Image 1 (cartoon, one colour):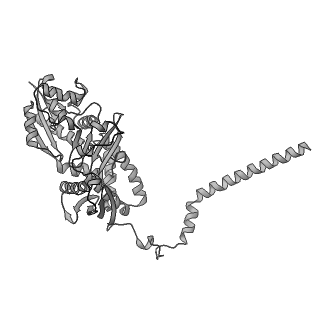
Image 2: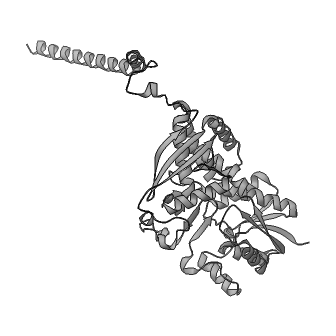
Image 3: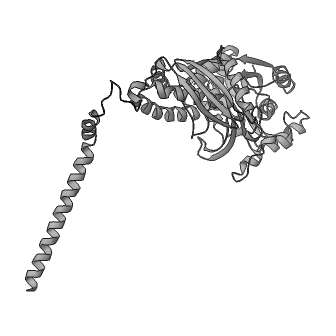
Length: 420
């Protein structure tokens, strides 16, 4: 009986090569699985290509709703960012893709799952850890870690040798990943960090700030318990909301990040990320948290956000710590509801007003005009107690200097007496 292998299939260069390679090296039937997380793809053409190159069948799983609600929103609510710039577009999708692959492997009674992640990249870690967490009994096949092909050029020659069509053009063969949340780009001139990206060959849903309109655009976003549900007064589901903000943000040149990052496997790599809608949502969410969360909670949540970003980036979604952080985050979001108005202008985002029924901002207290809730004289006692450690240390150092000065004077006096 032939071995069944479920392949994470995108229709791109890597997975197009993997199908004939698997058939060469395994006596197997290949079940190609495309996971639709919002990427701009002609699924009919992708399914046809999979079968043409040797797959027994190709399935498309539409999980956009699950992706938004169970993966993107938890990252947004946590304000999770990796190394200051990366809004985790690929990273949030990978655990869901791993989950779908495991579901199909169980359904098809397949003994192995294959993926096209390279032996240098982060995705191999994310896929492997996701599969291991959900199905430790299933074999994982990662051709990039075993085959003789060393580059994308080798892959192209491999397909040409088999008279199979190339899914990319060689002159524009960036390694890309796109979904509802973002587009990432790697390769070509980006492999030299001293080189400016050639955006005209690269950007897919964002214009450069130079080409953005010469007047600002305002956008209002409404949140309920940390989750956005309306744009400019119109309620919509998560996927539609992100698409709309991608269009608005992309037209205004926001959300382009050029980052040299630390990969999980230890090396540095460079990528350009387009996350226009996500950048708007992160900015708006933080503005709302500034008025809805108290100082201690906000400060601790900032620390949790860093850890959450590291966990998601490193493929550790299905772990107790990630789940615990998400539980903490959810508890903080109970009051994060309200409206945020933002101004978008040539690649920049700035706040243009925020309101919430749960706002902790109290004008009577914060105003320069003295109100009934705040007595300026109370600050004297507070500062004395708050600054007590500073005062005690200063007194100690003063006394120490005084003792040293007295000792020095005694020494000089003794020396004068002896000289006499």
